[in-house]
Image (cartoon, helix red, strand yellow):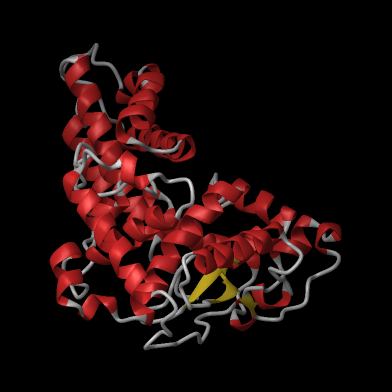
Length: 346
């Protein structure tokens, strides 16, 4: 069984009114992974570790987001995953539930476990690791510009996240290697650079099999029981932190695509163009850029809303403007994804 902090479950969460729920402090929710569907995911993760003979047992605790602390050997799990009502609330407030299905939960857990393994064995200090993935001390970029056609990185989480930083490249590669059904030897056989990384991880994990970690730091960071914000304040901060409305690049790029002054008296408002091309842009965002449907809709809604508020107008060829709008969706998704990796200071 996974090492889970013992926290009591709130037995009457479903009976609380909406106002009572929002006024409840996070520390008073009294939630637990035990008894929730997430428990089976943690057990599956431990089983995969045992099958690979990796003698590492990360600790899990509830917090506000998915994360592995710097140099930590434990994984924080979002509290809302442990109760159906909180999952519904998360979807209502944020339009998605990060890790809200068994498949997505396991993908994130395997990724976070990659960080744990890196920390536990100080892998980033090895010359071969640095030659393969880069230097862990490299600052995280405010925005990364992935190449969707690149065959140098594995594809695991959305938005080509392996391309964002050496640590993420390793965590993503490890997650693909660990996944029982990834079939990485065949899937990446024609991607020499990505295959080389996977082969390196395969050999490295065989070397580490049955070895005890050289470093352990399972201390929970920002456990739920220490957080005194109410749910109302938590979501107010989260929306401000994650929603793309607050990203300056969004408005700046919109104004570059759509002028703020009409060219003629018959100039079409940008909001009309975006509304009419919404289905096409959504298809591009999902099929070509690789966004999930929920994030694509969220960004398109914001693009339309900001165009209306800024009173922008359409100018140019429809095909070219559509291409530039799709590029903005891609850049904005990268901002959004990067911000999601930063925990809210509670």
